[in-house]
Image (cartoon, rainbow, N blue to C red; front, side, top):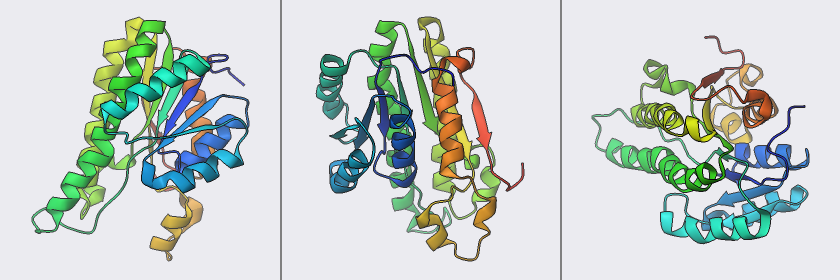
Length: 242
């Protein structure tokens, strides 16, 4: 298996969620030092994730607040050394309202905060030490909705926020490429999680993306095997079609 920057820690945001927990466990069981990050209100779930995987170090912080990032990054650098990579999973989904309906205002603000702002702040804080060290790889979890927004009727805020995320990824990837840092995004369709199965009980979940499959793609993009890939938007659609 291609190696991820040997002995350097990997940060995973949104680590208490279904996909974040899968990424944390996938990396940790393959011998990587994982720093698992999620918001304070997810503290119990975050601790449970850390107990499931060897050597995982949990940190509670608000991913949209630069002030909470700084002491955590200082602690990581002191205890574990320069960052090797990061997986930005933090985000969320809200849909069910058309843009012109009054309730859509709250959805719009929530989606921009949960998806775009969390990615922006995390990139801002994580890239500085990576650029200083001259290495690093970041994988951002986007969405198929970012490039196929017409499939998101009733969830325009979600599609717009994810489209902004992938634009951010490609622009910032160009900014740090010469510094030896890579940024890529994966664009999954529906991920096969317990929550998605509950919310869509009549869907054919066998056509969805398995967390294990998505973790393999993420791990490759973090690794030296993907050293010549940056600014890519990788479709991970399962069997829903292209």
